[in-house]
Image (cartoon, rainbow, N blue to C red):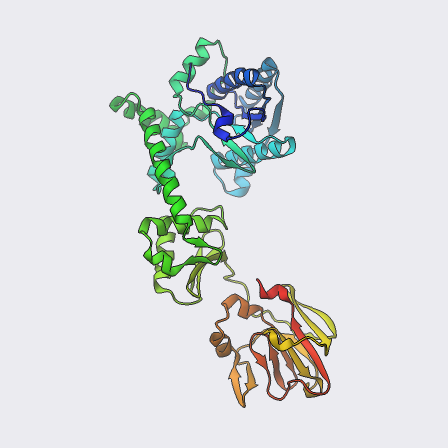
Length: 447
């Protein structure tokens, strides 16, 4: 008997929750199907299977699909199937075959789980897979998270992925199939050394077993220990992340390990793309300089920015035009500007607009010519306190973030700048006997 863990215990869910098995037809998933069928009969849960035909191997993919259909029928379980031209998809996206195939599979599994109310996805990863993953991650230059190997369970699209036979090695799984008369298919690409994982499996693992016959078990012990360490460090690093970003003061006082993990965790909230060591060092250098509103670009069209003593991650607007070329004549009521910016122009009302930096009560008689809204332009000045002040310098003094500066409209008439939200009103244009109210919609205030 091979090592088998309860899927429900791994998932932390009741024993009546249904299970979806990722079924390839290979020895691993065939053995796991047999184990799950017996487990389901004992615990009263339902097992489903899902098979993806990747159309990679012209002479084998139909064989594998028919085998899985027959296997599912043998155990009396429903099977969900999908055909996907992975070679074409990989060519279109620029992904490797392995990456494209994996993405297609897991997108299919996620859809089946959502449509059928299934919360548990079981995969047949084993101890040898875990060792391969560890070696693969080390050779690519992993940090602690990658050295933790394959987790026994993890969250997945509102559900949980579990690996019930992660503690069994390949030899034990093959023996289980032979002892129980279980048929399975063999994927010929498993022997194609153009794949990095296959080179590890065929060339590296045999050498490791000459040093330690039970190298897979040793690797599992290591990855489990590292996973415990990672969980502790992660929980401590999360304490550095607040609603306002990561405090630079707290980051400086923290242990270097916690700094790196806090950055990785905070970035992961905004992007599925991982950061490499060079990116983390650049972010730490940015934090060390602590220059307000300084920023660096990161993978996934993201950026890291310093603002008022905090580190923030956000979509990178680099390359966008800060000053779109528009000029819109303002009318009474709602005025929609580019970037979904809204200005309201209304007759005088009773509310005290002086409480808001985004509103102004203006003497209508002081408006010269046409009233328009436009972006800030180089050299723009506004007459305030008897001095023509440069808008760019005023925005610096107000400590307005760069992206907000590019969004704030400038309200002008034929005489020049009349009103700028967050900055103020031109001398002599304040409320008189005949007033209008100009107000920037609150949507931009909280962006």
